[in-house]
Image 1 (cartoon, one colour):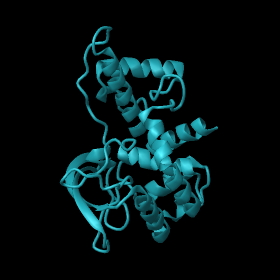
Image 2 (tube, helix red, strand yellow):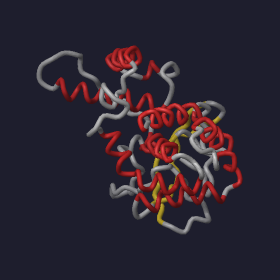
Image 3 (tube, rainbow, N blue to C red):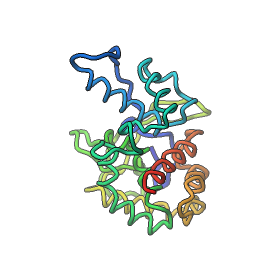
Length: 241
């Protein structure tokens, strides 16, 4: 969802937008486990994409009930018992990208949890990556667009951009990488090379400063982007304490 060699576009590609899943009625019996897991995933998407108050109406009725319960009990949707339960999709994603998040964090002068949070927000916890036409992943976990100066592989994907506060659907060209390591290294280099993101560099463990630095530099046009990233990064930092 990024513009050319530096981000300026909307909240995220189609791959990283919250999904809307038809939900069966709550109750026991066959398929209950799948329904419950689906609701957990829906809430996880919702929390990673925004605040609890700004988009509640986008959730299914069952999702709203579960969201209210999670907020009341301060329980994570990842596992109903910890910030990110062992064996959950979220934790598996964090474990997978941990080495590259640490490397990028060291280069950027920020805590690795902030980098991990950014990747999670942009890729829907790695579950909705940008893809090549044949279905293979581009490994582009940060939604960076391919501008004229990009010499690597590319892939066209649908994305949501905000224009004058209105979400607009578009198809844009994004960078594609051979693996996740290459994606993280390019992400760090892009931020370091572009003076627009100087305010995000060297912010340490300050999730708010990092997120605001990206937003002010034009990483996304979603007006709530900084708040979403700050919220998710804070959850990851809390989970690591």
